[in-house]
Each structure stands twice: as structure tokens, then as C-alpha cells.
Image (spheres, helix red, strand yellow):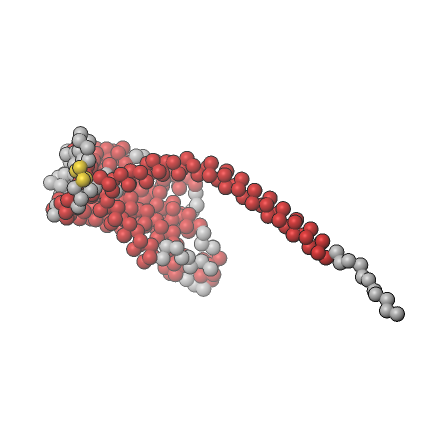
Length: 321
């Protein structure tokens, strides 16, 4: 006779189901937590997003639309297609303003970058005094308009203290802001004086990320400060320097206020930078359509320069392993 053996039912399926249920509850709890974090993040982001939409995105889209119209604020915008862009291409003053702007940018970026880098390295290698950093940053706390007015007084050909010192030294007075040759370099150096401290502190922050062990090892090997600068500082500072260059180039192309309060585009359009020419077309001659077309052209130029700079300098890559 065969006796059928029976085995107790396995509890593994029940245990597996319980584990799956616990895992599902944990997932739901995590999802609810993430959803709550997402809502909280949206609350904090909303003001910035609103400001971006109202003060940047919408004006940009509106400007692109107006660039295809004839608009003077007094009558409705009239669609003219590419007429404004054709006029811009054939406008010699536009091209002259662009060349003047490029001259300003080259002088400003060249002098400012070299000076800021030297100041940042000195702050990092010789002293890290918070007082010195505050002194370096002081000119940046002054607005461009105030800085322009102060330097206009200092460099005045007849009464400015700068020219008084030059005359006392037995040298002929220099019409810094009234001469076609001196005007743009002078404006560029005024803005270098104001912004170099801020740029230096940005580079100084990048230098702080470089490990001191590398400098100490290089000193043990007998490397000089000059060699350490080129072999350690510059390669490891490259990403920060690239971002700083992108920011300063974009800002330099948009120079306006210093020109407006010192030379008003003169003498003989020698300082008629592109932003000032756009301002004159819009608010001086009420040609908002044409001014918008030039603004769009400037936006395209800056976008192309930014992309080119980003790729050439490899701003998104770091040599720090």
C-alpha cells in the first residue's frame, strides 16, 4: 500500500508578496516625497522664472518681431519683412559702430584679463587678506554712470586734475575724451578700472580650487614661480578663465552708459558704439523697427562668439583629476 506523503505548504510566496508590498509602499512614499520637493522647488523657482519671462524672454521675442516691422510708437507696427535688415547691411554707420565696438572690446578684454589675472595670482600666492580683497573690489561698487562722470572731471583737458598733473610734469595736456585717437582707449581703461577687481575675485575663487600640494611638489622639484604659473596655474584655471572671458566679452559688447555720460558718441562718431547707435535710432529718431533689427544682429553675433569661445577654450572640461 502506498502512503501519499504530504509536505507543509511553502510560505515563500507569501513572504515574497509581503516584501513586494513593502517595496511598493516605499516607492509610493518616495514618489510622494519627491512630488512634495518638486512643488517646493517650483515655489522658489517661480519668481525667477516670472522675472525671466517678463523682463528677458518676452522683450526678446517682441524685439525679434519688431525687427520685421516699421514702428515709431505713434502708429501701429507695419510689417516690412527684411527691409530693416537690408538697410542695416547697407548702412555704413552701422558697420563703423560695429568696428568701434570691436576696438573697445579688444582693448577692454585684453587689459582687464591680464590685469585681473595678475591681481588674482598675487592675492593667492602672497596674501589672502580680506581687507585687500575689499579694496580691490571697491571700484566695482560704483555705478558705470558715476565712474564715467568722475573720470570725465579727472580727465578734463582744462580743469581736470589728471591733466593738471600732466601739465605740471611739463607735458602737453591730452584731450583724452575729446580726441578721436584717445577716446575709445580712454573709455576702455575707465571700464577696466571699474571691473578689474570683480574679475580678479572671480579668478581668485578659481585659484582657491587648485590644491596647494601641486605647488609644494613643484617647489621641491625646483620650479620657479613663473614656471609654476604656466605649468600649474594656467592649465588648472582654464575652465574658470574661459567662463570669465565669455562673461566679460558679452558685457563689453553691450557698453553704453560710460559712452553716454562722457562722449555721447563723439567726437565725430569715434565712440559711437553699437549700443549707443541702437539707442539713438530707437529713442532719438523713433525707428524702433530698425533698432530692433540691429539688436537682433548683435544677439546673433554674441551667440556665435559665445559658442566659439566655449568650444575653443573647452570651458566645460577641467584638467583637475
